[in-house]
Image (tube, rainbow, N blue to C red; front, side, top):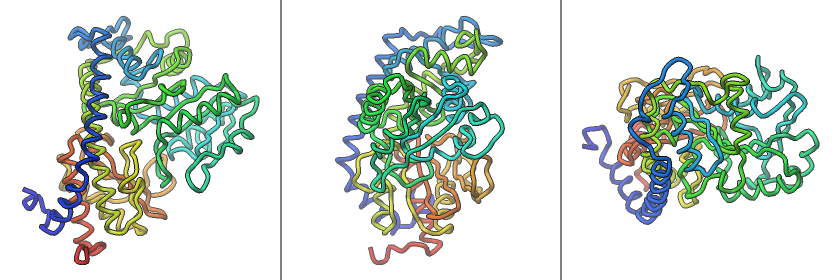
Length: 424
C-alpha cells in the first residue's frame, strides 16, 4: 500500500528502521495518553454528561445546559475554577485577544518573559501597528527575550516587572521560532518567580498545541488562565470551530464580558448544535494527541539522521506536538509541505505555494488537506519563506496517517534531489 501511495522502497525501508528504534518512546506516549483519557472521562462522569447536553440552542442561547456542562468539564479536566468554551471564539488568536483585552485596562502593562509572541499576536498587542490593538487602548507592552540557551532571563524579568505590570503572557509552544517548547514544570517555575515579585499579577499561558502532551497542564502549576483553540489538540479533530479559556473565575468572567457584552458574559451564546462534536472531540483528544506526538518524534528522527537541524531533537522530551525542521532553503520548506499535502485525505491533488497570508510579515506556505479548515491537529505543515527557512510540522489524527505524511515529505525531497539516502 505504501508503494501504491507513491512511497519508494528506499524511503519506506529508511522509515521502518527509524520506527523500530522508537518503540519504547511510543510506549511512554501511550501511557500518558491513557492517564489523560481517564482524566477526561472522570471530568465527564463527575459532571454527569448526558445526551440532553447535545441538544442545539439558537438565538441568545439562554439556559444552554450543554454549553454550561461542557465548560464545567473543561474546568474539571484542566483543574480551573471556570471555563469559557465557545464556537464564538473563532481561533486561538481570537481567544487570546479576548483573554487579554478582557483582563487589561488602559494604563496597564503586558509583559512577555519568553520573547516575542507568535506572529498573529503581534497585531493584537500592537507590536506591529493595527487597528483595534491593545496599544490603541493605552495598554503598553514589553518583553524579555530568552537567553541564548533557551532559558529564562530571570534578572531581566525582575527588572521588567513594575507597578504597571498587570498580566504576564507565556507562550508554551515555539511559534515560528526554533526555541525549545516550554515544559509545564518550567512554566511553573516561571510563574512562581513572577508571583514572588508581584503576587497580584495575572499569569496567562498560551497553551496551543500543548494540551494532553503531559500529564499536567499549566493550571496545575499556578497559571491564572490557559488559552487555546478547539481546532488544535482539545478538539480531537471533531470540533469544527472554537476556542477555550480556563482558569480563575474572575479572569474568565472578565473575558466573557469582552466576548459578549458587559452584563451578559457567559449567560449568552448559543451552541448551535455543535455540543456533541465538542464533547466527543474532547473525549478523543488524548488519543489523537498521542498519534500526533508519535508523528512528530518520527519526523524529528528522520530529518535529524539526514543532517538537518530539528527542534526538539530526536531524543528530547516533548512538550507540544510541533516539530521544527530547518532546511536552510525555500526549496526544502516547499517540498516538505507539498509532501504533507500529497498525503492528505482532502485536496491531496493540489500543490501548496507560498502566499502573503494576513497577519504575517513574510510569505507563508501552508499544507493542510484537512476536514476542518486550518485544523492543525490534522496532518499539516507550514512555515514562513524567510531565513532560516524552517518548516513546522504537526498533527495527524492517527499515527498511521502521520507516518505516511512524514514518508511522503521525505519522498518529495528525494524526488527534488534535496536529500539522498544513498550514503545512509
